[in-house]
Image (cartoon, rainbow, N blue to C red; front, top):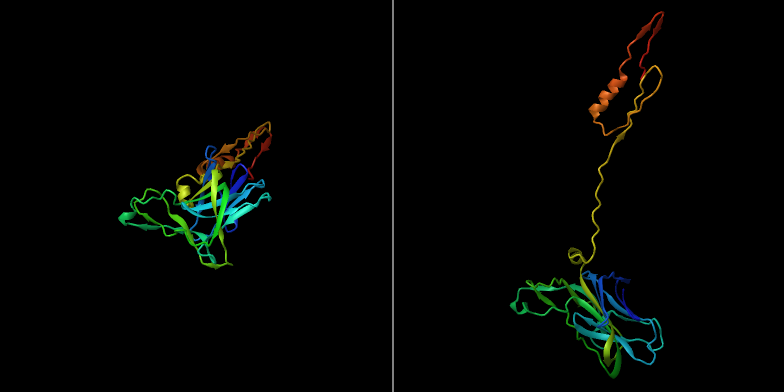
Length: 270
């Protein structure tokens, strides 16, 4: 989610807000910019919430899709934490179509070599005080067929398209004009998730390195001596052949010792 002063904005897919990355804020223009991951074929909705009630001011939020003005909504004057939501474009006063992330069409047609794609791949919300005008019947004004030349240096793979039609009761919209500088501007730049990862916008966890295992072998040696004392040696990482030799050394029989009148025989029963 993005926040500036008393306003919060976010974009949802499948009912969940999308994670935002590389957030930047400009206090001079009241603009907050970020990157979000997009997935072709997914419907989305744009949200804006105010913290205080507008009071006597008429304040609205207006959505721009790929640089094109779509429509807006007004915050209720005496309602705090009011959220306006945009999830569709008007086709007529009785038909709407939902917003949907769609793949752009690549072309080798020369007329698109220098075509401007500056605002392609971004969704913007502008919050401002407005002066209201007359009512009018809505009609489709959103261009969704975008072609990008295959030699374009701007890595745009998605654009905003429209889904299936939905019938609604007859609706009229009201013209409005922003007064003064916007109170907040929220710009969401959307790209394919893998593209954002490849460019370092979405952090990629470093792979875990496997630690080399160390084998600790207890080769404690009990020496037979006159005083009956023991000496312990801790040997690390011995090769199998070395362990075999050590075992053979430990298993060697102690030679018989003779004293006058007494025979002492020590036998290894290991």
